[in-house]
Every structure is written in C-alpha cells, then in structure tokens.
Image (cartoon, rainbow over all chains, first blue to last red):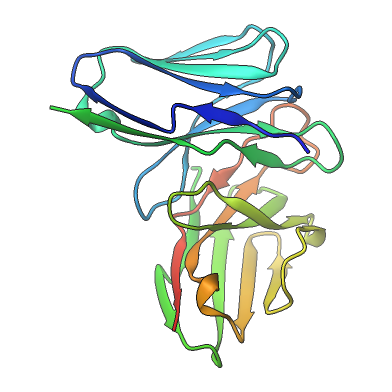
Length: 112
Length: 116
C-alpha cells in the first residue's frame, strides 16, 4: 500500500509570514497533485507535478516534486488570510489500478 | 470548464429510506469516481467507473450502489444506511483512467449526508 505522510497537520501563522507544507512517501508516484478544500466544499485542484525535480509556481505558491518522485512540498510566501483552508496532497499510484492516494491534510490558518 | 455538479447539496435520511445522489460532468471525461469524506479526514475512494463500467469497488458495503447511466452521469443509490455513513460524499472525474502520469481529478462540491 502506498502511503503519503503530510506535515504539519495544523499550522497557524500571522499574515505576511512564509510557510512550507511537506508530503512524503517511501513509494514512487506517477504524479502528485495538490488540492485546497474549504469547509463543506469539494477539493479544488491547485497543481499537478509530474517530473522529478519539477517546480511550479502559482502566484505566491511554489510547488516542488522530489527528484525521486517520492515527496513534494508546497511553499507559500507572504501568507494572506485568504490562504486559510485545508491543503491536501494526493499521489497517483503506480501499483495496480491507478488511483489517488491522499495525505492526511494540513489545516492552515492565517491570522490577520 | 472544469465543473462537476452534484445534487442535492444536503440530504437527511432515515435508516429505512432509499435515496440517490447525482453527479454530472460535461468535460468529456471518461472516468468518474465516488469518495466519502468524514470530518477532518481526507477523501476515501469508494468506486471508480471507467468508460461507464465499474472498474474499482473499494470493498464498499452493498447498501451503497453506484450506477453510471452514461458518460456524463454518475449516481449513488443509498438504502438502509447507518448513522456512521453520515459524511460528505464527493464525486470526481478525470480525462481517463489510463491517462498516464498526467492524471488530474476534478471534484464536485459534494453532498452532505446525514443519516438519522
């Protein structure tokens, strides 16, 4: 079974600070996706990383896929209250039927 | 357009009721999914439909019965549910189950189900 460990599970910081969320596994994934979810809503896809070492930027968010495609990180620069939410990483399995394996999520709170 | 729609948004049902959840996408995607999400947990995969055929059933109890009438629609029929089945039920779709490494799933807003 391929597992994804996401850390930290909870993070509360002040507006303007930087933060990094990590997603780690001992398994290799075909690709990895990051989602953001608001309470009572479905996850919204932020980015997909496919190639080992890939870096993608989405405004103040920077996503990186590890060289070995076993880990990923999300870095937010100058966090804003609008960044508050649940961030989920999800990897596409390489073994058996392709499906998404989710990390446990990081609940991020940005205080004004 | 990356929209997946789900109805109803909220559903309250008794343990003896029969109800259905509906999901629709018009992106031409050929794979559709049902997930269950409990509070403060990540989504858990229930079923996968690929080209309108059930390809994955994650050992879901038979009181949940999926149906894919056509490539745009996905239903989840509910019967004799238990209170512990109360959760957010999410539908998702992707271009295809064998889309290689570039495999993106788009989620609907979910149906909040409460079983009394």
